[in-house]
Image (cartoon, rainbow, N blue to C red):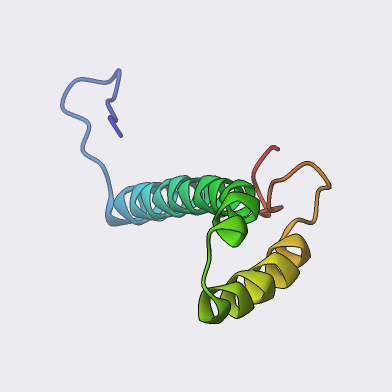
Length: 87
């Protein structure tokens, strides 16, 4: 994040810095959640293939994941809804 001022010699206040830090933190969280969402979608797509070649112990785990992943899909489009993010 880059900030600047049009006024020469203007310094940012502690409040300005607190707001900037909060925005940066929020942006990093949104990016992180977006990456996790992509991982969940990728995992969900992989499960049917993995189930075909899984052992009996793996089958139970994969079946459980297949049950849980749709619960995370709140949009109906293979994505997890996240407050403050466009889908």
